[in-house]
Length: 638
Image (tube, rainbow, N blue to C red; front, side, top):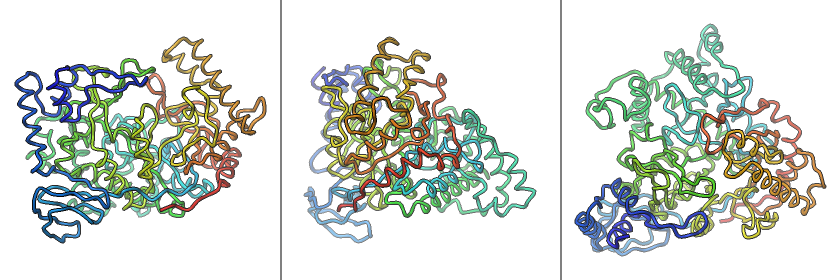
């Protein structure tokens, strides 16, 4: 690659090479680098353009200019180019030449954002809990899928658990058809109204007998698969009946919420993809948008307030837990959705986040998700990122960050290129993780990073240093030189341990080879069917041998015995957090999501085979809760 193009790419954090899944150096094509630079507004199409862009980058980075954001760890010092006006978060100001001995928080210095972040978080307690796909839970009181009322009941009856880890509850665009995946949200700053328990709203309690009867008659039954559109149709009809009973709140109380509600109202009128709206409506600050008036804005703001109240109630129900409710942060958003419209200046236009080629996805992965622009985050003081975290931490005792490597770098796929033609774009981990730590510490929350797959050593080491937990999954925790499963004593301490994840086989499914059978039927196998069955048998036998070596099973354990032994194995690990999945303790065979499929498999739509009352009474559920509850605990270490 041309040296000047390489220097320009480095100046903007665009990778020109990377280590692939086999740890081999892989060169990125000049065309991909030029395409990604173009997304960042940098013309690299000619030698003259590259020279001009390099000169602009040198001007941007000159020593006498403060960047848009300065990040300091607690106790760090930084000399300034000259005297500057420092304004602390509490409003006090003074002139300084050196930034030192500053309190944690958000400050300004000569117009630049200065954020002082913790060196590390307090160490989380040692405890256990449940992994819960909330939509899959259901009861006599929920409408076709699990809801926040079910969550409160589960928290009260789930044994002496210390945490409940949820799937993402991010907002969808509330129009038909409603998407199933919780990992392609319309907004990560607001919540999904499909999880609202209608009967728990103040307005339902105020309603007369006849109105309640009309609303109750709308309730959809739990089917073999979850129909999100039918659930939303029913809840929307109920909410419209209750709207006349609602107390109107001022739309100026939370401008961000009002902006989101305005998007929802416009989406109802013009469709769910703002990129297809009339041109005069495609920017949230456009005159036509600011002049737009509709009662539906207040209606959608009210719905979000109802969801917020029920999220607060769930957190209060978990107040006695050492950790509490742990929310899940999706790696990105649907570019057609609310945040794609509202935050478009902070997002890379036309880019789709994904992953480079690997053994299972030889053409790479295109997740279709929007990605932050690192340069805009810096120039705007990470305001959008901070706002997102603050809104989530209002209701969370912890946060799981999906694909935590994305806080360091993310694979960008430019327009009109395939997934394999992308490249990594780097973010500032001092800022991304530091701000995450600051907002988590202020909320008293723990942070868990999903650091599975191809993760650089520096990423795991940084999580460890900052007391952010990693993820240790039984299926993956092996000595990869030999392929052997690690013993329980070989697990890392600063981690959340689990048998599986939502993207992997359940415990009973793995023991039965369900994943091979299903993927074979759908044509999703990387090798031949015979090779896959042979690999599965070797993995199953190796896992059972691991359990036998620790004295947890005999020669031919029944599925329930083997699943209980897997949990006892996790209980022996030094991991600070150990979790059990309802899919595993109920011996469900189907996994929630089968990566690489869309309509071929019912991803995110499979309800549990037992209702809530049956779940908490299930013998294996109670045995696992007792087993994990007897695991030695530990006070948080400072």
